[in-house]
Length: 268
Image (cartoon, rainbow, N blue to C red; front, side, top):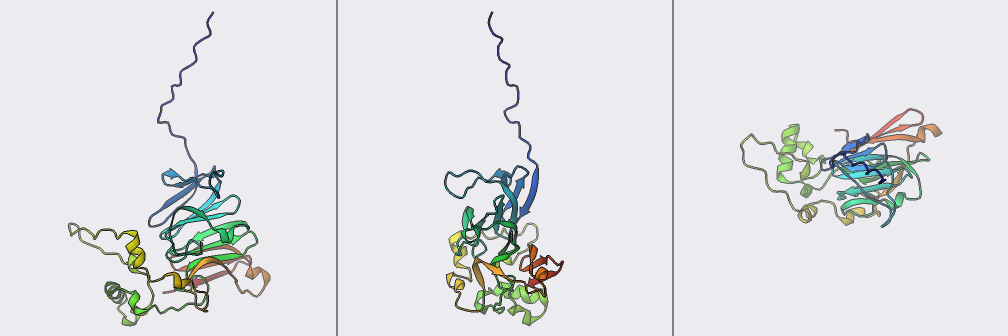
C-alpha cells in the first residue's frame, strides 16, 4: 500500500509573526524599537548589525534617539550609534554622519548598562556607575565649561529676528538657540510650498562647527566627539555614584545612588 500523501501547508503566505515590543524611541528622522527577543527595529523594518563583518546578530536591550541620531545598547553592554554626527553626538571621534549602526569603540571593553540621547548629545552609564557623555556642550549639557556666546555670524538674519520676536528682549538674541534647522516656519493652508530639502553635503557646509571644534587644547568644550568621563562631586561616596541619566534637547539630569538629582545645561 502507498503511504498517505503529506498534508498541505495551508498557512497564508502573508502571515505575520507577532512581535512584542519592549522599548521604543523617536527622533526627528528615526523611529526605533526593540522587542522582547532582542531584535532592534527602525520601524517597521528590523535592523541587522554586528561588531565585525559576518558576525552574529546581537541582542538589543535598549534604544534611544536624539534629534537626528540613534543609539542601541546590546546585552553585552556595547553601544552602537548612527545618524547625524555634526556635533560629535555619535562618539566616534569625528563630526561625520553614519548610515548604519557603528560600534562606539571608546566604550568597548566596558559593560554599559544605560544609554540616553539628547538633542545633539549622548550619555552612557557603565556597570561601575561611571557616567560618560559626548556631543554638543553649547549650553553646558555635558557638565563642562563652555563659551555660551556664539559668534554672531553663526546666526542667520531670520533666526535673529525670530529670537527677538519670541522673547521680546533684544539681548536674548545673543543666547544660543541652535542652528537654522531649529527654526520652524508656519504657513497658512494653501500658501506656497516650503523650500526643497538641502542636500546633505550643502547642509554640512552650513554647520557652524567643524573639525577644529574637536580641539582639546582649550578649557572650553563646545563639541566633545569622544565619550568623556563626567564626575559628580557629591559630599559622600553614594552622592557621587550615578545610577540613571536622562537627556533633554540641551540639558541633562542625573540620579545618584543617594537619591539626589543633578541637572546641567540649558535653563532658559
